[in-house]
Length: 156
Image (cartoon, rainbow, N blue to C red; front, side, top):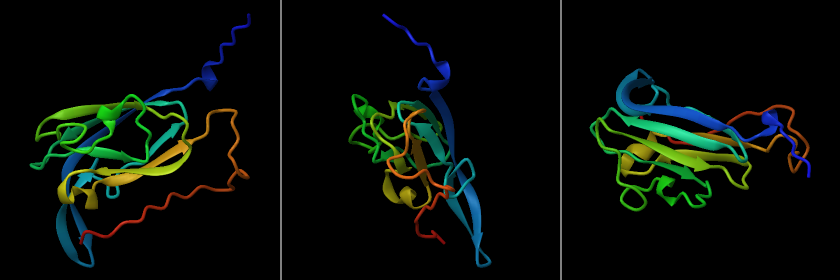
């Protein structure tokens, strides 16, 4: 029996914190208050590898209830982390927090996360980039450069 210990190749637990707050955004000389994540619009990029565990603490600082859906993530035995409010979880109320805890299983590519309650999905969203496990090649020629593109409508 052989035991290999390759800590550099092992899956990692990745921690993120999303502070849901109001943020002023100005477009074409017009300023509007929008709900954002960590003061960013679009929200922060999540980067993980296949097999990684994600712990994402969401803290709600706004007057609206919030929940986050991890669009396209296979929630295998973690259905409570899927995010649809009133379906798989109660929404996160004002002043409260919730930790989403799930593992990326059998997936690679670019997905996205977004608010899953009322109109908040128009400003609370961002990319999820899932890289292959270490030592596993891309199913195509390795890209020369990576550029994240997020499609969305300007809430202004």
